[in-house]
Picture (cartoon, rainbow, N blue to C red):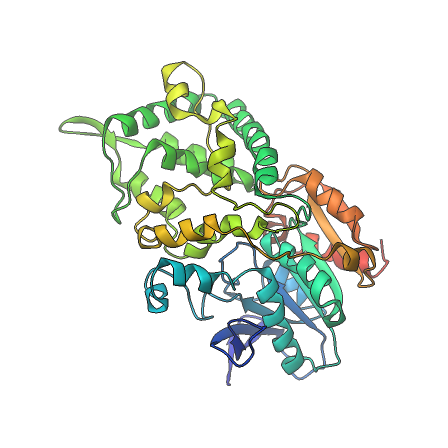
Length: 436
């Protein structure tokens, strides 16, 4: 394929046909896409490969606009492959438009059962053999869920790895879905308390919006339903470095006065839709709890664990908050069954998501024995204040991966790789090379 050029980089497309089920190599096949990025002027050099695994699940790799952010640091040393994980971006997309081709909800759920980290690793291995050479290992950089996948890579195909870098993504390899959310709600509560301490006027501003949503049916521009619970889901942004400020600006500009009096502004509703809609990343919602499913850890279905565990944390109850005078607490990276009623992009996938929530036989993703014997040089950035991935779970896992070196920092939030202008990746590279 021909090459494209952007400021400071040369891009090349790579497409591979891979088995839907790698244990049935002669069965149905998918198309998986990766974008090669190399520094301009170095495209003919024999640079080692670094494959980037995006966070998610269900999110495509970033689309570079040039030599920017962490990619600029990576291109000093590597030829980078930005992999669109199966079902995302240009890799046989799975969404409300394409999944009905599989059949009904049960058939769709069986199909999506092949879209977890174990399959992504095996897809990456096919790319590695084609691009780097069968006997040549490459490096992996995993951000968030991409870090979960990198740990699965260390478990399942360590022979394919030269080195591994993880940012904000060491999974709790012995934590089931309920364990994840029992640890998550207190972290999210702390982020709420910090936000309201920073912006005390937001207590009343958020309560006023939630009360309006309880009293009126409010539709977003694309037809989605904005309920009080959906409004609370804006708390997802509290886990990023600038998220608290973005949330403040959003809710402080929520109202206009029309002929009938105060009402929620079109501009507010448009912005809210941009934060809440899963039209671009439906698998983030559909597959979210399945990434914690491992039969040796918890053989039960994940069963909407976030909703079930939420009942133990009454501070997140919108009605209780409105009945009193306390703050309305926003939620975080939780997927609830009602989301498949309020979001038009997810509504057709409601029964499919339910079938996945009822599945009880998820294979294990991580091999504790292999991790304990690990020989791949590896380093991980663990963000001490990470709202999305529990620090204690991450550090417990770090102790179980032989040779893994951790850097625990509160200088950045979960998006540190993206916003640190290459500093986080540089630190991990130097750590693996023994330069620190």
